[in-house]
Image (cartoon, rainbow, N blue to C red; front, side, top):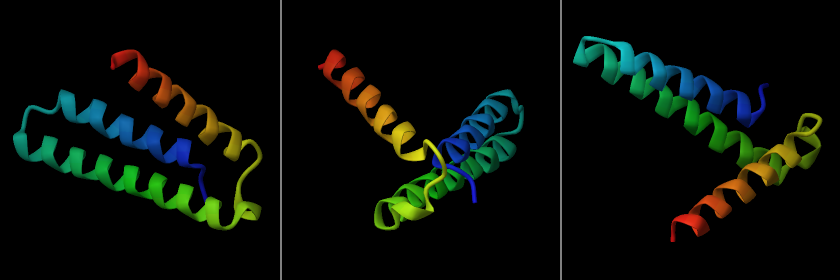
Length: 78
């Protein structure tokens, strides 16, 4: 099983590819795939919160760091 950060990376790759697609249908499919990867990341985070023993090395720290960065950027934008 992958880390949540890896799922989010796949989601970003799908969004980047969608931006290059000429067809609206293809763009929509890539964006839908990105949404699925994001959902997998959310599910992974929920799983390791309930079962910390399933986390990969450094995964908890990555998520804490990501949340701090998101909080800081929201505070800066407020």
